Length: 390
Image (cartoon, rainbow, N blue to C red; front, side, top):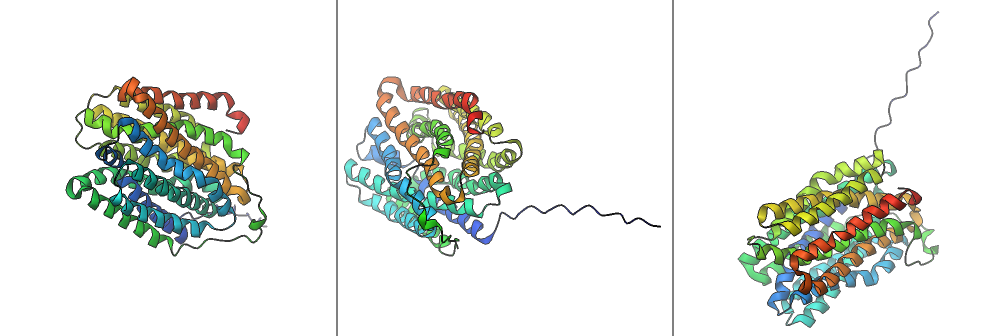
């Protein structure tokens, strides 16, 4: 008598990440942040052309983040109520209008006002895009999905700063601002077909400025973003001081490093845990800042950009995934807005604080001092991470 042998069940295929709406969101982000990254190394130079000092240049960079920070908690709440698509489109429109408006900046005060307005677009677009991607991502592949989504920003960072400097040389500031505006328009057009799901129960969510479960990952992200306020403001000036012809090359090295590690880091965090990725990421950020501070030319400056980029590429997707892991779908937008607020606050304070200290410590000293912040984040994670589930 033959005994029937039961075949083992076929392995469940992995859930699909690249749906139509996920792909459109990533493409829209690439162009929208491309618009932003064209201006990343050039806005400090524009501020100097308008008569800004080194400290005032830090204010010009930092006030953009302040404009974003003002509205960010409200944007997270609106995302939870099903308004992500509208926020995505309004934010993209503000990017386009702001880029063109820089043409009319007649002085430092006007530039500061325009940067604040531009920052309100940053409060809307990434908050909405983060919420949409978190909704679309398969839970078991969340870190991997966040890594792929982050590539849209990273690729724009790889191309944008160096291209922005090239456009500045070829077309001057009017041509640069026009190209930046048109790039944002493409991002707006790609966002139009994106479909978002609406939960009829969401309107009952009470308003909260932050989600407590997101505070620890937000604090860790802050320690990195504080450094980017200094890097984004002063690397262009420092590179020129070191005789580097195109300061955008630092940001290209940074972005290519993020591009190389981000998806792998997201997948690793899904399998090995978020802390297994965040801890070495913070260590690399510290090393990258030290290399930048010690640089004497293009080679060491690029080495700093590579280490700095590898660190961020590991930290960011893991922190986003960890935040989504710990919060309910009903408050996911607010939780991600809490994380993004730390991003903006860190950049703003980093630019302003280091702008106030640069006269005493010099450009090189700002990078040494900035390295203390991710070092503090690393220590906090090692000491308190388990209490928060990391």
